[in-house]
Amino acid sequence: MSTPNLAIPHVAAAQAQKEVTINDGFDGLDRAVTDFLTVNLSSGDVTLTDAQYRGHRIFRSQGVTVARTLTVPAIRREVAIDNADGTAVLTVARGAGFVDIPPGAALVIYTDGTTNGIRPIGGVGGGGGAADFLDLSDTPSSYAGHSLKPVRVNVGETGLEFFTPGLSAGNWAVPFRGALVRRTSDATGLTFPWFASWQTAVYDTDSFWDSGTPTRLTIPAGITRVRLHGSVRLADQLAAGSIFLALARNGTFPGPSSYPGTEALHVRHSGTGFNTNQAFFITPVLSVSAGDYFELRLNRTGLTVTSVLADPATFFAIEVVEVSTAQQAPSIAGARGLNSWGGTAGGTANARTVSLTPALTAYFAGLAVRFINGAAANTGAATLNVDGLGAVAIRKGDGTVDLAAGDLPASALVTVVHDGTVFRLA
Image 1 (cartoon, rainbow, N blue to C red):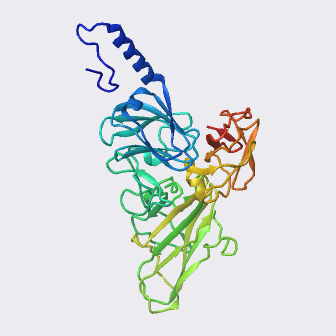
Image 2 (tube, rainbow, N blue to C red):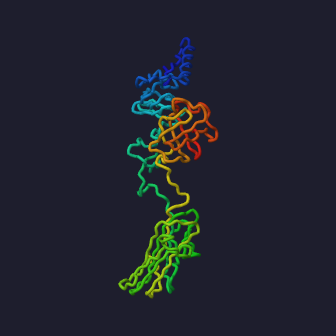
Image 3 (cartoon, rainbow, N blue to C red):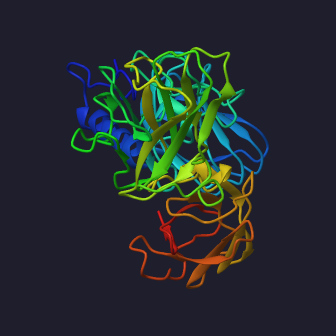
């Protein structure tokens, strides 16, 4: 009889020299918990024996200059695989299951004793908890066909998925901001020109309208660009004449040359074949400041109607197009965030260079770059130049202390994060 996973022999009943079996068992357990085995893969893939897998805690690869596979037995075991000296990916396989370990990384894996049972459970050294995004248990299985797509939580809230943004249910959209005001009763006995006075808000996301100043839509703080829509309908009259609809800003009419979209719109000019008296306009996108207010002014000539109808065609609306906190993504490369892979760095030991695909167009706070350090460790303070944008100091995690000799080991997997000023070693 022996133990179920490490196969350490049990002490038999009435056994002579029990201490020999017990001491051998202690030795086997000690090796299984602490010992390491160097596995040479320079000549090809390697399959570990049951005894090798049970008898060691850490397996150090050697000679991984091209992609290699290390196959492990179907034994319940937690071990560390170290590919720190490799320059290519090492795949650790169990049946159809596998875990990829990048060059320069180390990873803790667990095999559950089943045919395909293998998964990463945590990192040691530079390896992290998974070799890449797809190694996580709740992520898509492939990047194929998903170029530049964002990631979201799936409908079942059980994992992540790539998706194509659009207008279908469940896709992302920018929250709408704006207001729509109208009349609830006809405005009668009017004299012209008349500033349209509104009685209710159909919607108003940011208090653009106040019943205390019923003619106005006022810009709150933080809004920088808007688009306005307006329409009025007078009582019907079949007669010659004109209707003029104009947009006023802050009580004046600056005109189209200085403020596009504010010119007066006139309809029915000198015509007699019209009966429905309605005018409508929409502005282009307009730059605004907090406190600006807009009004509709209605005028008419030749007609004698004095009523504006409480009709669906009588309204005033504002739509927010831009706010002061809006930001553009710095670049496609920037949108990749933590997955900006630079490959093996060039340059010198203290002045590393990397290139991303696609190329970065500007540094920005939060940019994370991963790369394999060159064949020589740094000898002191070091810099990184990404895509020729300029050398930026690499500092320790607090962002203030320069690197010491050896902080970038030869051939190590390195992650740095730009804080807006320098790269911090992660």
